[in-house]
Length: 348
Length: 218
Image 1 (cartoon, each protein chain N blue to C red):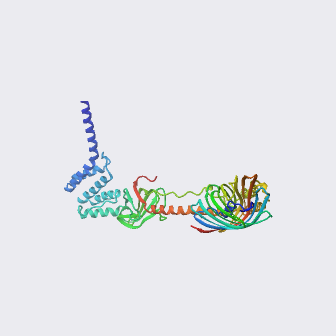
Image 2 (image 1 turned 90 degrees about the vertical axis):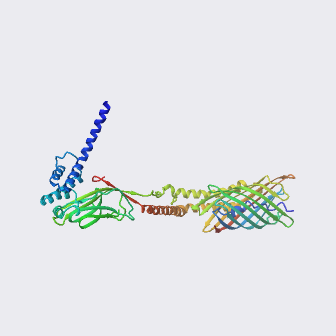
Image 3 (image 1 turned 60 degrees about the vertical axis):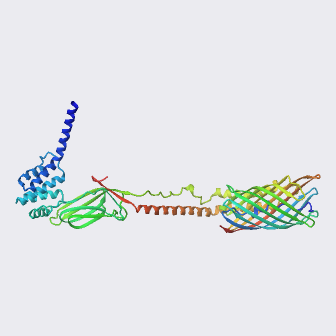
């Protein structure tokens, strides 16, 4: 029994919350219906309530703008065009994208709205939506609007930065769409990160200024790239200069020939056959001369040409491999897709 | 029948000089000249003879590590004593070489040699197996070469198998562009078993100068 009562209470409470959330929409809809039936005097209080600070229920920006528009239309329809203009201006200040349809509003209302446009200067830019853009064939689109003619400058700037890519800089009026190819000022694909579309405008009628910002995150969807080969470690290269150790080693090798010749002549030869070993002496002398010559040459010209050439060959092979990797990576980077996601705030 | 001072095998001496460096897929050729000295003692004292021999070799690398080499030589040894005998020498040898690590080359091969004197002809057939060590100097422009071969099978007309048959050499190879000049001292020693109270010993040594050139790189 207690459980049933609690369930009913929660249901009513939930119902109450829903009613509160929808109450503003109901109120605006009701006022619009009255307006459509030309029951203007009954619609006006309802609309006033929506824009009043005493209105207890949540009001979205769009609902508030709609209330102002219908207030402006209602007052104009009843011959109070000055008041109508005031409300139209309030609507435009909050949303410069507001338009009145000629099919639904009278010429007087349209005229009043046009006057409100002239007397009000406001600029707005629509938030970007999430999108995937192939920069080779597609463009990132931004939409902005001014209430009347203005000089407008729109630029994409890295969040927190001061300079960026100017997308538009000219006179415009009303709604305008501008595009960005995703390239930075250096002509390369813009780096991933948070960006700001910064729009500055100056009225051509009143010289007033206004600005708007739209933040978005830019990401790169890139196929996996290959790593280039690391720089060759010293251990991977041959020594290019020989010092005393190398010279001594070569001398020792020459002495090895002497030892080998004398070993054959003195130990392996049959002593009973009385071989004088003349040829062994010749080779031993040649070994000594060669070893000494190698020793001197090593000291005199310490560079080792074979090793220098081998190292150069290895470095060139590495360079060629890295060039090929870079070429493949460039092809993959050319296939980069830009991932746009809306962002709030003023930077990372 | 040839005299006791007949020239013995040169098979183990020549390969050192004719052996090209094992390279990848190459054909090379070489020519060499040997100043040879032969000594033999068959129980009647040492009988020396000497002379010049010339030859040529061709080598083909089957793989970067494996090479086949064919060698041929000929020459004459003139007697240096009244008891010795002059004779002509001719030899053909075939060897397989495998380049192991660290400059070590393993080798096995066969050779047949003929000594022709005024009164007789003698044939030597042998099998040799051993290793060669090549150590580079001056960044490879020069190589020192050491070589030791065992001849476990030596068949000689009219003689028993020797108790000891070895060949060794030491020398240098100088690489000058596509040409390699070689200088080596080589020695062959054969100790035959005692027969009729006499122990026969033979030895051939020589100084060889060679020139090798790479003919074709595949």
